[in-house]
Length: 320
Image (cartoon, rainbow, N blue to C red; front, side, top):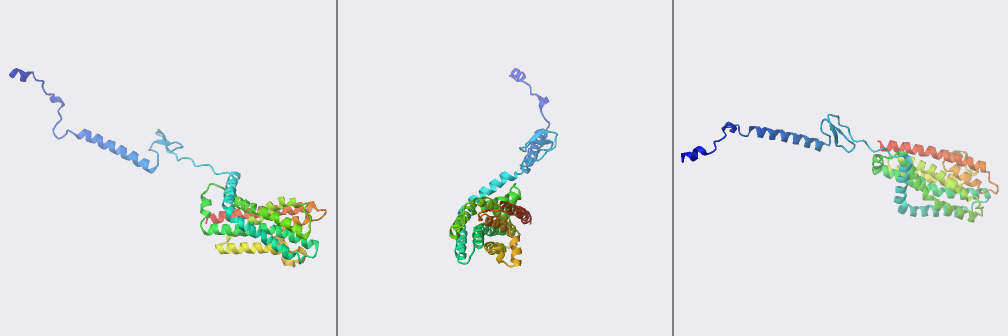
């Protein structure tokens, strides 16, 4: 019995730890590990790379011992692609809502020509009535409706949406103006053809409408956008659009020699006047194409100024 006790393996007293110090070292290691884990998780929640690591383009750290850099921003959209995107969006949005108004504008112009047929007693008056009624369709849509659209957009806070997009302000103004002017093409052509039939005018040079429509549309759309963006209230934008359309009706349909001097000066300041004058000259048997080109050039210059002013008004309204 004593032999078996003596043969038993002796205990390893060298590995025994002193009382009260058994779990000190493992507890310290556990606390250090938890501090590291909590520090890394706090940095991950904050969205920053850990200290000492450079952030790649996807936000992940590159290597320790380097500074952290924010992710690069996306490049700003160029003018022409942004213009095309805004134009397609405005065209699809207004396709359903603006077609009934286009019919109203066309019927309005045709009705004015029917009423003026009994008043116009000469070829000069007939040419002025047909040319002014054709451009009136452009004024109704591009000037009146665009002024109301931008006035409603500013009053409802819709400009904030365009201000946050990475597109130039000129693309927004030009895209909306081009979309609204595109709706006037069928109504203007129909009005011009009906007017030539009513007043027995030649239709051989109606192809000039291909130049008159975009130039007069750009000038009137720029003016409409400018008035709608500067109006402090939506009702004032609607009023300005209606007054502009009435001015185009009064000063465009009546011949220039029948107007008083003050109204003649106002007619010269109206952007659509030069498009009307260019269309009037084409009804002659031998048109003066140099004068037509000068009128179209002036209309293009006025349209450029109007669109530039509308772009400035958009920046001003979007940053206020």
